Length: 377
Image 1 (cartoon, helix red, strand yellow):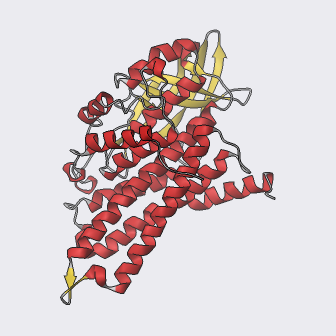
Image 2 (cartoon, rainbow, N blue to C red):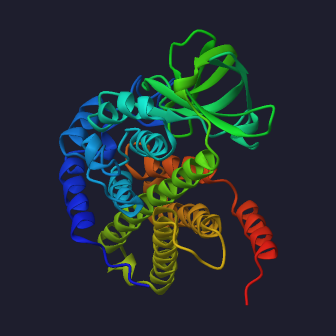
Image 3 (spheres, rainbow, N blue to C red):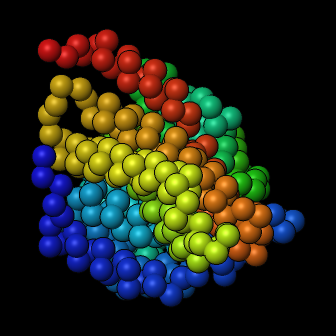
């Protein structure tokens, strides 16, 4: 399979590098030293730059002011954002916009997509369920009441909730279907309770009590939530890859300068072997990411559904990013635990990504179920 990137995808990467070049990962207070959130809002200045560079509309069609690119292009940009720990809802807002474009009605598309592509409207997705361990679509109920939908339930750990204009909420109906409701942040019947993430970012628990949403703001289409969930998971794998590559680069630079017994520690076999193992992890994370992004972006057929490729990518990303930061901490010695050094923040973000992806064992079990249902050969 040819994973050579197109000229358009490479142009998106160059634009992203230019935007993120001025972002300093050590410019944000350490979550270990901050009693509350490291910031009240996401980086609005960086968000505006992303909009000016047309990076918020990558996957939107030309009729909505977008470039019409694919999931691989988005993942390439997300990888660059994670290298500098960019504090923007790029993944969530882009993924939600794709769901609207693919499954939404004409009125919803006309109202949301161009504004989202220009950065004027910020979207986020509630995908953690009640506890972070149960299916998000089972955490909220949706029932019809005339031309309205009534939502009840709660979702935990909603990213960027306090800065988003609309929260995309999966909810199950009495017919056991999943709908996507677009809930305004300050909507009647919707309450946010502050939570602080491992990274020190401000999350929220969303509590819905008979929140009434008009029909035009609800997507009732089969497969919409599954597609959105897979895009979010694949994008998170891209974030894990970018973060891991940045951390391995930091480790290489440090061990190349740090000397013991008159030699750089990078020349010691034990150090070189550990670094090489983490390089292998990153390459496995990369190839499984592009496979998953290509499958969900093109809908290309295969022996297994695309969810199988996403599961493999999540297995490698969840395990790989943890091993990369742990090895980095070990090879940095006591310096790696210094909260004034950027590695501390990368470690916190890596743990948050690992938790978001979920344990590799769960994805291995899901992959096993797919193999049982779709025997190969």
